[in-house]
Image 1: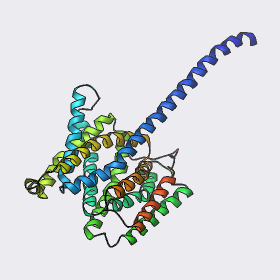
Image 2 (image 1 turned 30 degrees about the horizontal axis):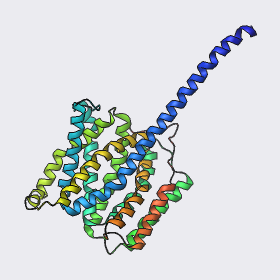
Image 3 (image 1 turned 135 degrees about the vertical axis):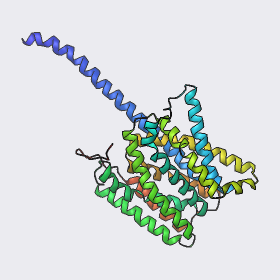
Image 4 (image 1 turned 90 degrees about the horizontal axis):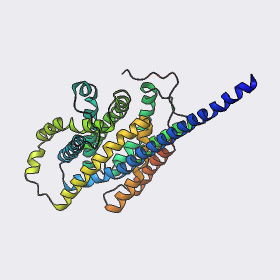
Length: 330
């Protein structure tokens, strides 16, 4: 019996090794896919904020800048999908009814983002964005099945809070009531946007390019009416377009396509809180570029407060999912 079992055992070993190799290949492919998503998102996120600031500076109509970005992204994705180069989900009522709140929240978040850049400097937006994991880590645990942060991560989160308060103290002379209004609006919508988009990404089955198409094309209609009632059409009628304004508008549209794609890839790979932390850490490049490009930036004390936030964001660790997690209903 022992001899007869020997060949069977020898036959099973190659099968076991093959399964192990398949698992290793899948793990490596998954790791490479995550690295590709995070690397692309970090590169786009690092320059997008500064590009938007320069676009709004040379073309002071934030609604029109955003309209061009969304329409260009949505139209190009639709066109390339029609040519058969990428897979894009067609517009269907079933998916629109489950997905429509994502582009609306996205529109409100990006519009408030651009209004902050219009009324304050880049560092102001970054420091408030860096503090959002304070709220998102708790909401992640309550709604998306994550554990609460570890002690190390709690230290990092309170470091974020200290850096934000310090920044507000040193930059209180440059902040206006309008700036604070748009910061508060952005903060509320952004927290909802991060959690809800993560939930929809996990529950509504769509291709990545399909999500990009839906997110960019659906908000175009309400944004058109926002531009009309805010008087931007009148401003555009009398605006003298320069080479700089056209160039930065075009660059912002290209960056908009890229960040839309990589953002959805990254959201599918990591948690909402860690996605936010990754976005915060790459802002070091944004701050450096902002200081190099022009003099419209924060005081040295404000920049130091900002770097405290970014250091804490870097050392923050993503909380694992709970085994008995109770997530948002599908």
